[in-house]
Image (spheres, helix red, strand yellow):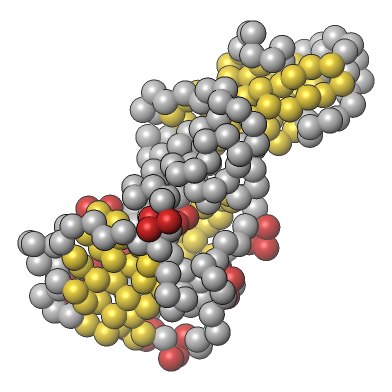
Length: 290
């Protein structure tokens, strides 16, 4: 996990004025049988749920820092929607924030048992920049599908293009398998003949990370790393590989992950390779001198 202060911040146009919890309301409407305005005190009557969840921006570049793993607390989104009871004609959920940002997700995803309306992280209230008082968390999709400062949940028929989708970003925004080398750092100088642990993190969609491989010769040969998955596929996987006796010289280290669905990262260019419109799955590469 990371400290919440280290989690990246991405906002649409602006960070809105702070709304105290006691004044916050969320509209459950659209094609709902029992449209409802939910208050903060009503929200607290639902059972508390807690889960580890990695958040990643769809614009995260190769090896980028726009992802982080945290433990969140809140309530089941499915339980909230059951209160309003979407009609059989509805198949998507429109999620809107006070900052005028909105997106649309399949109703089945919103009703997933892992989907939640989060109001705390690490046991503390959400920081304002991360959505105080509440934000949506959904499994297997990038942050653009998990709005902050949520004030409306509307059941609708058919997918409606949201804020970023109207600018060409992916409608589904499913997380592409990716990995990042944490150690050593790019450009590092390393003593020759000493064992070197190469380590990092990997992340994928709800199928999880099945495998991570490391190359220290620019991709000519690959070795399997040890993987340490999180408590669920919604959390990143930590990996490590021992470089037994690095030879003197310059080496290009690469890491590639394979998802549980069989998607493997590929070499596809540099820092911003293939980020738009679906997120990148390009291999992270660094150069070190031994």
